[in-house]
Structures are given as C-alpha cells and as structure tokens.
Amino acid sequence: MPIELRFESTLAVSPGQAWSWITDIDRLREEMRPWLRMTVPAGIRNLEDLAFQPGEPLFTSYLWLFGFLPLGTSRLTLRELNPGVGFVEESPMTGMRLWRHERRLEVQGSGTRVIDRLTVEPLFGAPLVRLFLRLFFANRHRVLRHRAP
Image 1 (spheres, helix red, strand yellow):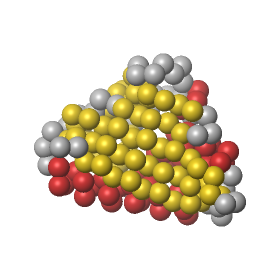
Image 2: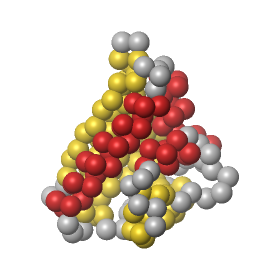
Image 3: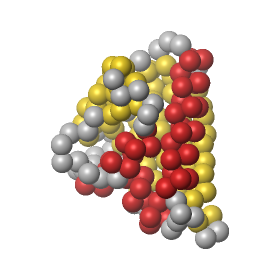
C-alpha cells in the first residue's frame, strides 16, 4: 500500500527565487544534509540545464544514508518540469516499488509556498520508511525556511 505524505512551507521570497533554489543541484543537496547524500555527475548544476525528456532517466545517482552508509541508487527521472511552477520526479530507486515526488510553487501573499507531495511504495519496512521520510522532508523544509531572509 502506498505511503502518501505532504509538506509545505511559505517562504518570504519571490517565486523566481524559490524556483532557482529548488532546481539548483547544490541547494538540493544542501536540503538533504545530514540525512542523505546524493551523487550527481560532474558538471550538472541545475535541473533546467539537463536535456529533459519526460519519463527518461537523466542520470544515476548513488544514495548514502548520513553521507557514508550506502542505500542504493536512484535513476533520476522527471515526468514534468514546468519552469517557475514545479516538477514531478518518478525515479526508479533501490528498495522502492514506487517513488513519486511532486514539488510545486504557489504564490502566497508576498511570498512563495513550496509544497512537496510524496507517494512511495517501499518493498519492505513501510513504517520505518514513513518515519524516515517525515524526518527527512521536515529537515528539507527547515533548511528552506532558514535560507529565506
């Protein structure tokens, strides 16, 4: 049975600024620390720089729990990439029957709301995966909120 989770934060930045943050590889990796480290091929700086074909893997990334315990791989695959609006990632991933991450931006007053929706189906350990994802994405949103002035 799939796990569905939602996380959101309102940031005191323009949608353009928020978009630059959520597509910048270094900023994405910063959001993941200290929980997870994800490798990215040399030279990739931004999701928008990639030759995007919906549903086609962009690259294979190695995932490391706490930066040093190997978790497996993810074949980063975007279904949608809508500049200034958001993206949908559906990546084949070790230990998952399904990994779907939707990240959207919405104008919220004078700021921008970042909304993450996850639908995942782990092969095993669903309660542990749910707990990990809650902690991991709560941290990602904490990093986003601290980044905003």
